[in-house]
Image (cartoon, rainbow, N blue to C red; front, side, top):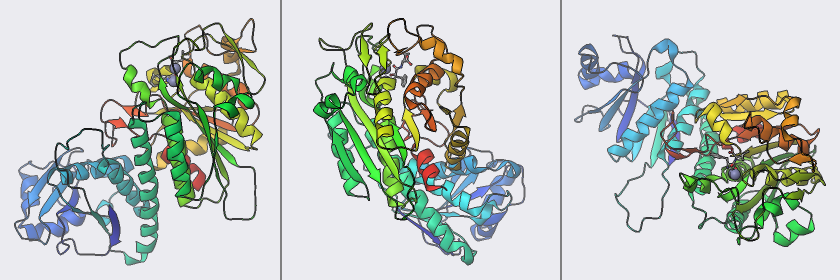
Length: 500
Ligand code: BES
Ligand code: ZN
Ligand code: ZN
C-alpha cells in the first residue's frame, strides 16, 4: 500500500472513497465534512438532522456521490463527542474505514488531518495512529486453502490530506516510519499464525536468516550440538522431548555512530508448540499453542524495524527456539536440571517451559555483554486471567525501563500494565533439593512468580519482562485489532529502542 501525504481539495481528489468524520451531538458540521457537504447537496446535514447519522463512535455510513465530487464514495464516520476524541478513537475510525473500503473493493482511500482540530491532538500523533491502524487492519493472513474463496482486491493507495504544507515533510517521515513498524507487526502476525508443522524451530531460523539478510543485521545460529556444548541445560531439557532440532537465533544490530555502549538485549520466547510436555495440557484449545513463539516473532520483527529505521543504539536479539513435547526422552516432573548459569532447577511442571528456555537465553545475553534486557513471552495463563486480552503484563527490576516501555507501547496503541515483583515471591519457588523450582505449586500470582523465576537469572542487569500470553493471539476483535495474531510487543520495543 502506497501512503502519501498531500495538500489537496477533498472535493477534487479522485479516489474510490473519501473519509470524513462527524462528532456526536453537533448539528453543525465541522472540518472536511463541512467542506464537502455543500457539493453533496447538503446530504450529510440532512442525514444528521434526520438522526440517520448520529456521530456516535462505531457508527458509519457509505454515501454514493453520483458524480457530485471527484470521488465515488464518501464514508462518514462517527467520532463520538468532540471533547472525548483521542488516538484510540482515531485508530478505531481508521480500522472502520479500511473495513468499509474492503467491502466496496476500493483501491484508493482518502483521509484528512485537519478535521480533528477540535481536540488538542498533535497532527503527527493522529497521522501515526491512522497509518498504524490502517496497515494493521488491511493485512490478512493468507492461510493454506487450496482455492481462494473471494477475490479480495487490495487497497493500493492511502492519501492523507494535509493543507498546512509546512508540515508535510515531517508528516511524510512520520507516516513512513509508522508504515515500516506496522509492516513489521504484520509480518510478526503471519509468523505467529503459522502452524507448528510449517514453522519448526529450524524454519523460524531460516526466516530469521532471511530477515537479517534483508536488513542491517548479523545472523548467527546455535544448533543442538552448540546448545549442549555451551551447557544450556534448561533449554535442552525442554527440547529433548521433541524430534525437532532446537536452536538459538542471535541477531546483532550495530548503530552507525562511533560512540558504543553495552547493547540492549531483546529476548523472545520461541516455543513453536507447547503441548505442556509430560505435564500435558488439556486438548481444548491446545491448537492455539502454535502461537507460543509470539515473543520470538515480536523480537525478530522489532529487530527488522530497528535496523530499517537505523536506530542509534546497539541491539542484540537472543531467540531460543524449541518444541515442548511429551515422549520417551522428555523431561519429567521431579527432574533436576542444571542451567547454563550453573543454577539448578527442580521441575514441578514441564508446562512451565518458557521461563526455562528464557533462563538460558538471559544467561547467554549477559555473556554477550547485554547492558539492559527486555524479554517478551507468552509466559503465563495467569496473565490472561489478570488482564484478559486488553493489556500485556510488565514486570522488572528497573522502574525507569518499565515506565519508558509503557510510554513506548501507548504511543502505538499497545497497552502494558505493571504487576508487582515483590522479593517475597521468591519464597514460592523455594526447592528442597535444587536452587529453585521451575514453578510454584501454590497456584498464586502466576505471572509474578514466573517473572521471579526469570529474575533469578537476570540478577542485577536492568531488565523488563513483558508477558503477552493474553494479547498475542485474539479470539475476537479487540479495539482496532483484528481477530487472530496481533503482533503484540513489536510496536512497544521498536518505539522504545527508536526513542520515538
Ligand atoms: N504457554 C503457556 C502460557 C499461555 C497460556 C500462553 C495461555 C497463552 C495462553 C506457558 O508455557 C504455560 O503453560 N504456563 C503455565 C505455567 C504453570 C505451569 C506454572 C500456566 O500459565 O499455566
Ligand atoms: Zn507451557
Ligand atoms: Zn508455553
